[in-house]
Length: 176
Image (cartoon, rainbow, N blue to C red; front, top):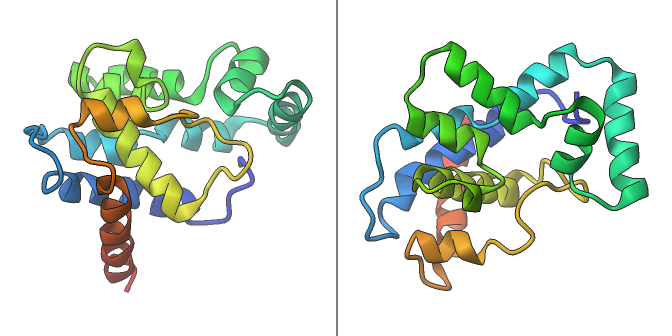
């Protein structure tokens, strides 16, 4: 589903979780322990969609993106009536996960739509994992300008790249 090769979504989730471990060394903020869970589960909605959507609907989502020049979230909402983050939020509610984890999952592409820090942390983890794995290519749904995420997390201009490089190294160790 979503045109991803086997294991890519797993590596993306692991890279996001590893980002949380390293983020603690690059920001003055106290990173809540549940951030790791939110980062690991942020794309659970995408996993479900990839298992249950017929290939034709996935093609329609991609086609709408290309034809209308909109991001994946907008295309998912247009075709399905919801996006993968919202579906992931429904799953987190079903599992009775705490509200901060729920917010991180639902708003990992739209952190400015919530007041809590968890969505910014999860968004940063997703951005970092995306930069490593390039799981969406030109069909991106991440923020066009992630500056607000970096500012909210108190990161300097070089911190995102440094974290990415450290996560890449750590991800290779985990893969081995």
